[in-house]
Image 1 (cartoon, rainbow, N blue to C red):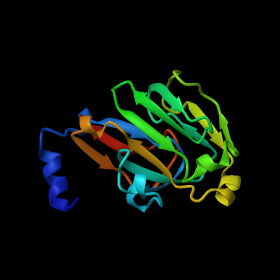
Image 2 (cartoon, rainbow, N blue to C red):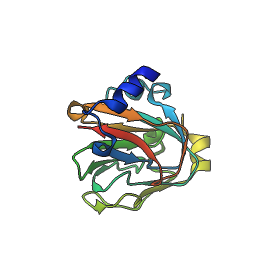
Image 3 (spheres, one colour):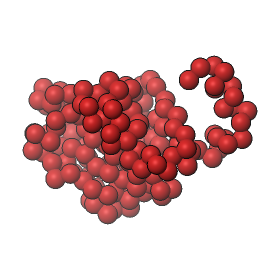
Image 4 (cartoon, rainbow, N blue to C red):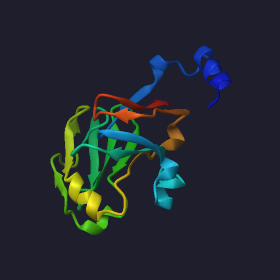
Length: 169
């Protein structure tokens, strides 16, 4: 987005920052463009749009207030529906399903109501850096058909503290 687009957005009425749904970092680390994830399903936004985080911590937390949907049997990924109706998918690493749960611990349960920052899954980053194809963790919005505009942040983020996405429905 160029400077002109940013200025135009700042003065336009249809995407007021106050109206945005804020999605917070589900894990600490550095934001990476989704296109850089070494998996075509994420890089080409087949399951949704968003970004990825190169992790530096040891837990995945709820990125918003909402309800946990599915937690994969191998505890490497989960879905959450925010109280505002956004459906999100957080998937730790690439091909981590092949580890059959090694390095992951489930903390939350499917159907559980959570607040932003509540721990959903814990992971052993050192082990996963050795065994996973990639630790880049996609965070995508799966109901993009309901999204009018999506603004992505960049830089280093702390789980539950920093906004990574702003969404207008």
